[in-house]
Length: 304
Image (cartoon, rainbow, N blue to C red):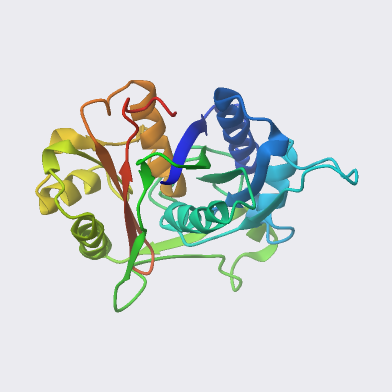
């Protein structure tokens, strides 16, 4: 028994650059695919970091919840839904899974929706560049409790020493009157190697706890600070490169949405059918990483 992915949703259309809208579209798509009503979602967790116009208040999760049409009825007997932001960079989605596991284990919610995604705060573009290396995209994981021997295991987290490797901030000394549309991103020269080191530690912890796992039965979905990062991680773990699944990186790194986008793509094209489990590994600023083994349903991808 555990928590499994009931469905997924994504949004990458270029008719909007609003991460509120993209996340809401992904959330609505995941509900439609699963045949789940908005009132059946007890909790919405937003793990995105870079938001429209550098919004600070209110919580972006509340804006996404409203745009997705979740928990908008307030009659006495109506089901209650609430939402909150959980920001930990690229690791946030797996932190959201951790929280969802605790919530769903209590039976206090029927479904938990984890949404993720980032955008340039200027709302003028969707592709990454050298100054802002993140693509605009929204993604959603609709999670539910199951009595079946499938779903997420324990999420393992690792923190590295030293500088954060990647830092993002609004430079208040120079932003002037246009600060709501600016973001400074600084990345250490050895950032990818340091992220890889913590990612490997987290991944090995997840694999070791699972016991006798055949690498040939394991697919890998990982963060994408570079296009080569997931394959580098798989090589360190002794997993074949053909087992790696990645999102569309044509616009750059989708950052917090990378893992759900990759899983959605693999589920939609049924490319997980040859595997028994997926190793999810997230790594980002900190440097920090998280990893969890996800046991697939008997028919891989059928739950998505």
